[in-house]
Image (cartoon, rainbow, N blue to C red):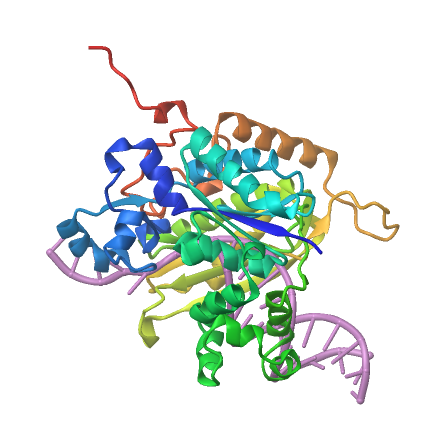
Amino acid sequence: MPTFALVDCNNFFASCEQLFDPRLRGVPVVVLSNNDGCIVARSAEAKALGVPMGLPWFKAREAARRHGIVARSSNYALYADMSNRVVEVLANFAPDYEVYSIDESFLAFDSIAPAERSTHAAALRERVRHWLGLSVCIGIGPSKTLAKLANHCAKKQLAGADGVCDFADLSRTALDALLARIPVGEVWGVGRRLAPRLEAEGIGSVRDLRDADPGRLARRYSVVLERTVRELRGSSCLQLDEMAQARQQILRSRSFGTRIYDLSSLREAVSHHVAHAAEALRRQGSLAGMLAVCLRTGMHEPDPSRYIGHQSLPLCPPTDDTRTLTVAAAHLTQRLYRPGYAYAKAGVLLSDLTARHPLQADLFAAPGPSPDSQRLMQALDGINARWGRGTLRLAAEGTTQGWQMKRALLSPRYTTDWAGLPVVRAV
DNA sequence: CTATAACTCTCAA
DNA sequence: CTAACGTTGAGAGTTATAG
């Protein structure tokens, strides 16, 4: 029987901000989504004040000022770098692991003796704290779903857990009592739609869900929920995915910092997204067979001034060349553009992805990118990797970029940019 | 009719 | 001064369409 450990960083984004700016220690801190839109992370102090997740910043700002809450724009360069460091540490504690998200990883704990698991996890926790200054919680269980749930218990310090919770350490009755106290919505895979429906039919706790009839749930809801129930019962249905699979589609979209009205700015923004999407495409060694562009006005715009447009174009032959993609995207943007609307967001989707180097060459397949194109794109990516994203780019992206997202409260890139290092001045 | 494509819904971080 | 509310990806299930 397998054993999974789920490692999850506590208040990850907010902790990163506090780590590099000592003035923020002990202070309520919130981190905002792209465009400084809404609150996506809260420090322990901010949670204690009852700051809700997802609150739009413009609604929170005044109360935040009164309570001395400090806000930061999200700084993905910083978080991604810290995330990689965390993964390096935990790889030393478990050779088989899956990076599940920027702040969570699953570890295979199968080869560790049951009695050792908690102490091993505690040592990992201590190492991350000591080396990186970040605090993590670890949940251990016989399925991914149970490991996630154990992690929840570790975080909430349920059942005497202090940062580590191994369900195997609990007696059957203690586990039953614990699961009876946890709302069903905490289960991985039970979201805001499913939870109320389950509650309405008397399945309010995790224990209720575990003890429900899987066959009936499969018929009434979905096979996904059935699988979740089996996982809650301790039979593992979801494996560890150590190899990150190549993406089946690559989407780049952003809300603008301010509303955009003119076609040329839209084309620039779309070109910018194409450049980033194509970079991601080449990084995973794929070619795109389809390109789509989306333009839209504000989400809460009333009907007559509301507009959402998508257009797509097949790419024959499939390509990863930013130039080809940019030209195609410009056409689509022009086709979509309707004057008079206040555009809030643009996006680009690459789909129908295929591998650039198929194992078995297809006799009838269209030829891939020309050697010239490949060399040029390699040079482009090489220069941008060395000197920073956007160092070399097509003129189509524009230079003023007035549509760039708002990040008024951005912290320095402490770990990935020399200019972000705090200066210590000798007195 | 079936097989597939296209689209919608849900979930997660 | 005002108005303002994230992004990306996966998978299942449903509906439309082609043959």
